[in-house]
Image 1 (cartoon, protein in one colour):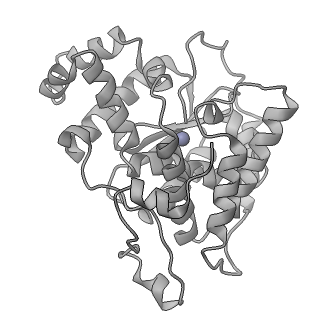
Image 2 (cartoon, protein in one colour; image 1 turned 120 degrees about the vertical axis):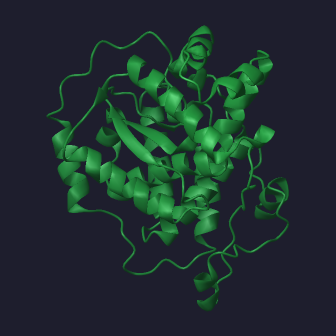
Length: 300
Ligand SMILES: [Zn+2]
């Protein structure tokens, strides 16, 4: 499938050839940075407050099903990256946070409202900070683009459960938990979201600009895709959840390379850090992951 041109993406995003208006500083550099502008409302007009409430319910269920692991070095490090990226996103006021899941599957995912998860496996395969930052920026892009909340609402709609979900969102009566359980549990529901190729490409672009504005070198996207592509090929088609529902890696790689021609990267843009390597070293001392659950991994 051909990669959509910048104009196609802008048209699909309903923004014509709009220039990102909240980054006037970019214009003073003489560059015309463009980025998809995301709609300011979700499908079904779910408010931010409702999205956050639903995300909290999903997070609680996901954490019952997944081996969350805490580490006093890794947790603050991951959270500081997420806060920096989110503050430079088009949706900076959501309660973003990130936790580590003790599994070797190479993946990261985000929930409505900004709760995020990074698998230990991802931390172990990335070789420099910018690759990790690109992955997390992509996940923030899914929250910013309201892809996660929209897809989850669609899943509820498909089962005629939207009304009971919205009616009980702020009630602690067990209804939401029962619905999530009846739909297979939080992890299975997230695994079946199937973001569209447009959502994935938009999350890449949104992430690219978050990363760039936050002072990292967005070549990290290219490095991350190249690394994942290599792993995928070397393993003879291992299922990397982060890639399995995404456009083929070479296409995403080409799209990011194109985007790199559109911006000026400062010479001091960040690519790596001592903190990153400390965290990678620390990951070796985490307890062994518990036996792998039979349920599918959530998609990134
Ligand atoms: Zn994605």
